[in-house]
Every structure is written in structure tokens, then in C-alpha cells.
Image (cartoon, rainbow, N blue to C red):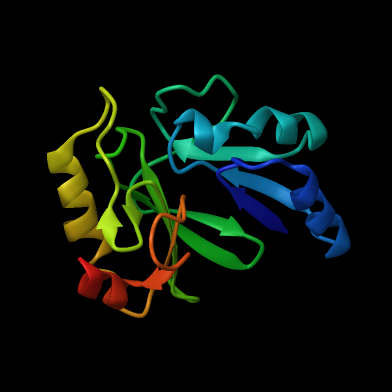
Length: 167
């Protein structure tokens, strides 16, 4: 089984990958509902009618059916467990997804390589973003690899330890 985090890119290469690796796409996880992170959601839903969408339980702009998540709720993708971490600040519906076993953290726009996310909309809050980054994410194991929603830094991904050094 497979999941997509933020259906934000053209779907044909993803579908080709899924087919070439005999995967079954079962879930879509949304880090937040800015348009660039859900741009291709409907395309996937149209193609795969059994996909389940997961996002924060009070999304700002999601009209599709979804399963709402709370802080520290677990999601299974195949035999892998992901923890949903509620990380408001960039947007009030921001979530990150952490795989403890494989030391992976998908941060959306909450944290990038070398810096925190931005506060750029009416639903942004700098104090919440600070709390999310410093009190929820940077306290995870230092070897955890951060996979941000955009490649704005000097590397596409980075460990928490190296990111702390860049801050």
C-alpha cells in the first residue's frame, strides 16, 4: 500500500511510478490546504475511487470528504505507522507526518531546510509557528530526516540536527 503526501504535482509521473512498482494507492495525507499543496487532489480522487484523504480535522479549504486528524493520531500506510503532529502557524490547519521507525518527518510548509515556514496569510500566526517548530518538531530525534513541502534550501532534505545548525 502507498500514500501520497500533498498531491501538489502533475499526476502522470506519480501514476507511472505506482504502476511500475505494483503499488496500491490507498491514502492521501494533506499537510495544509494552501492550493499549491492540494492542486491535484481531485485528479487523484477521480482516478482512484477508493482513496481516503486525511487532514487536520478542521481544514480551511477542503470540500472533499476526508478523515479528520488530531494531534498525535496514528495513521497506517501498509505496515508503516505515521504520527500526525498538529503544527499550526503557517496555516491553522497545518500538520506534519512523522515516521519514527525510519526517522522521517514530512513538514509541508511548517519547516524548510535552514528555516521555519512563513506566515503569509490571515490564518497564519507567528507565535503558533514558533511553538510548532521549536516545541514539537525540533525536539524529535536529531537523526530524523526532514522532507519539506518545497525545496528552498541548500539541500532538498536535511536531518533535524543539521537544520538546527543552519538556524
